[in-house]
Amino acid sequence: MECKDKWRIFCIAGIFALSGKLALAKECESLGERLSSTNLELLSVVTKDSKLCVLQSGFQWTEGPVWVNELNGLLFSDIPASKVYHYSEKSGVTEFLSDSRFSNGLIMSPDRKLLLLQSRNRTVSLMKGDVDKPNSTYENIITSYDSKRLNSPNDGVFNTTGDLFFTDPPYGLPKGIDDPDKELPFQGVFLFTKADQLYLLESELSFPNGIALALDESYLVVAVSDEKHKAWYRLELGDDNSVTKKTLIHEHKDIEGENSSGLPDGLAFHNNGLLFATGPGGLFVFDSNLVLVGRISIPNVTSNVAFDSTYKTLYITANNTLMSLSMM
Image (cartoon, rainbow, N blue to C red; front, side):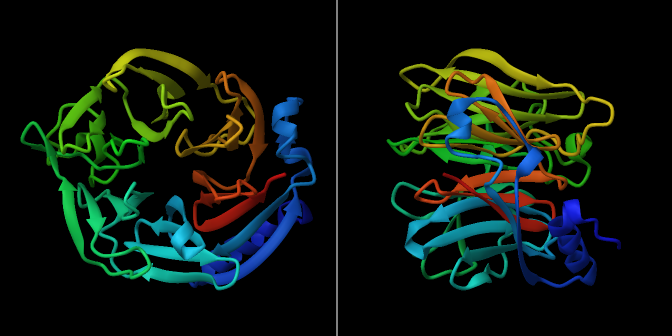
């Protein structure tokens, strides 16, 4: 494999991936022309001098990053390996859970328990015990809706009162949407209340994937990872958290010659209201009115993003790597 200087950090990551081993290969480069924006709000937190780093490579498919204050680090899934890893600046990457039951999204609950959306297991589960005492034993929290098994729980977010919103596409099923074991006739966005009640909020999106809750908790943003309709939607929430209105935010159309690898996927709000979204070619950034104000090109398929507690680092799961982007 020949490494061109322009993409050196990604080529190095690819070499480690081909070796079949995890290897700490922290290589950083300035964003430079990979950042495309003239928006002052975005440029106040990300500039062409911001550092994009490959922290480690050699995974199979990384997903579900979540910052955990108790660990002073990041947890993330390697779905095909059925493992969860921990990353910290001090220790690098270490194995956290040896059997995650094919977790995708990872979320910290309001009472500081680790919630796992276990895609191929078709469950939403809690890891038993405290998050600083990792163990691969789980309590199933959600397994079905209307007496039918969930498809493949993917991504989720809690509100401040302890209600959980999550998406349920078919990606963990061996044959996807056409799998004979698929029981639900739709791919849903759900609400699971702190009173243990499960409600279907939305059933018409083709492939609901990443999900984020607005800072004021008035709406959800849901990424639709449909090859024929690469899009993001806004779901307005009523006082009872039902969806009162669905609005298309942005639909991506591929441009010939442009890096368009990947689909709309994971999302994260910055504390200033900007929304960072993984999608074709890298990251899309929307302002607080959900207007697209910038893009960051990454020549690796991005799956999800998460901020640290200070919002000074954006962690990016991308194909077989864990990456980071420094923020102002």
